[in-house]
Image (cartoon, rainbow, N blue to C red; front, top):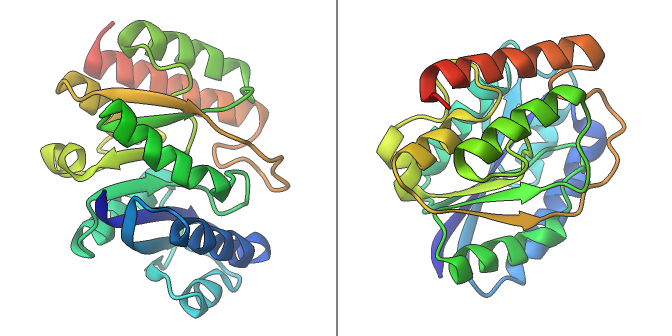
Length: 225
């Protein structure tokens, strides 16, 4: 049982999908017996559309960046806000509807049944060739199949042991690797993945592959093999 679950959503110009995503998240969490209270933290990373307006209308705790600071910075601020809101479980999701909120209750239930400190979603497929290299490294390093899945859950003690989500633009991976280094138990669960209609958060083609390979190199330098 968790006293308060924090759903952390980084968003950049997601007005077209955000409202429906938040409604589905609230509906799923209200049906989840393991959840007493919840807080949806929306980090608007420099949007120029109605993203912040929609999030506030739906009752989210909103953090707004005046300009785009990037995925890791958004999650850093989202985790910080969720901690201030008194959350003891942090779950990251995307704003574009790719992650199905119907997975939430099963996600939380799996964490309790596995007695895991971190749960990593496993997508049915990867999007880029570079993800297979990063996946192979994560599998060798800590037995994690799909480290780049943005649907993850962390107990408060994992975040508190590090004090931040990211320090070197790891594209959302440093806290996971820190958790493994510190001996926290990491579980995995298959998740439903819907097709996204916008540009992937790490960019398409060469740009996306470059960012992932750069992160792989930095993780190797920081955490070894």
